[in-house]
Amino acid sequence: MSYNWDTKRLLEAAYLTAIMTFFAAAGLYVPGLMVFTIFLSAIPLVILTIKAGEKIAILSIAACYILIILLTGEIIVATTTLFSFCFAGLALGYGLKSKWEFNKLFIFSSGAYLVSLLATILLINNIEGINLIDKLIIEPVTEFFAQAEKDLNEVAKALGNNQVYAGGLTILKDIVGLLIPSFFIVSSTLFGYITLILSKSILNRIGYDYRYLPRFFELKVNRGTAVVFVLSFILSITINEVTISAALANITFILSVILMVCGLSVLDFFVKKAGIPGYVRVIIYIIVFAITTLLGVVIPLLHPLNALIILALIDSTFDFRKLGHKGENHGQ
Image (cartoon, rainbow, N blue to C red; front, side):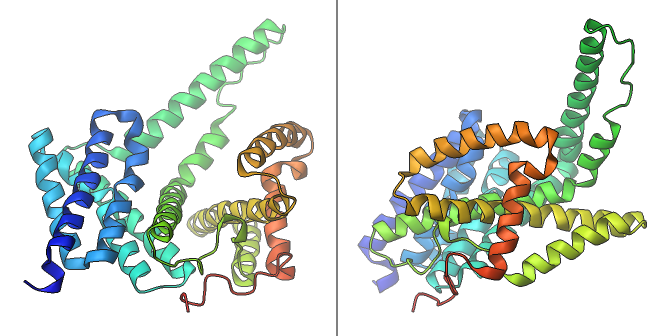
């Protein structure tokens, strides 16, 4: 028997496939877990790809697919479940096995989740005849703003103000509709990053060395990203052509989320350096965020999200943490 098919590898493939199937099935039977199983199912596949190779990982996916069909009796459900994690698991597993740099790993894992999301939407739209974008985004947003306008009118009447806020939140609703592509990309990058850091953590614990990859408090944007953000922001509010402005607004939104995360990373670096434990830092951030959010209503520049963006932009130039090129040495 060849090395790839020895008993040890077969057993590893079997139990990792069982773990992957368990998490995937748990999301179907416990709806509240569905979001978490998207990356929890991908992690065993990442480990399997690294330990046993891509061929065995693909066979494991096939076995998982068959098991989910047997459990649910629904081919479409099994297919969409598999789509939610298999592309990301394979891509990230191959990338980690090849010791890719952090940026490349992050882009590929996020891109794989985006492909999964788009493939699921196309599959459901064509087979079930259900527009998932309307069902999951447009309709909930419309209902939210309709209820918000109703609540505003009731508050106004209670205060003796007869002004009717009909359509008063239309602009915000239109903005949400404009940024739908960004929501897909941002959610994909979120899952991509979570899967990456959890996989890295587990792999480090079982004997693999991925310490070259940055931890959360070491995340940063480069100067090029900062320049693109500033330019896209300025152009999005100055160009009147609708299509171009919408594209630039989506780029600005995506980069602003990345900058916010990296701004929090800068803050976390110095708070951690003071010796404050992780769970205490989380509590502090929540309290500070709540207070500064209230101040941001009066002075928008003081809103914590804006402050984090500005902090990340400044750090991209001055490199407060002196991180150098963390995550780009390919583990060597």
